[in-house]
Amino acid sequence: MGPLTTVLDALLRGLKTGDKDRRGQLHDLWPQIAGKSFSPHTKALLQKGGTLCVWADDSVLAYELSQKYSGTILKRAQEALGEEAIKRIIFRVGQIR
Image (cartoon, rainbow, N blue to C red):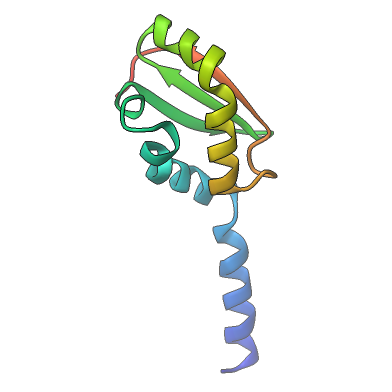
């Protein structure tokens, strides 16, 4: 393995830990993070600054998640993606696609 290969491998590993990769990981892991009953009715987006924005398709669900489950969801997301990647969580109501 030559020096160029070593440099390229290190560069690619660095790129994989970026926000774009974390967003993909979040999308893939969301059913495990949110749970089977909540994941079909929610969508998570990672915003700049480490904010996890969770969109719910119903205002009652968004309220319930924010009041009862925000700590659990935040902890699961941090365990999956790292505490430095996700610092806080907010809930919004909107259409889930």
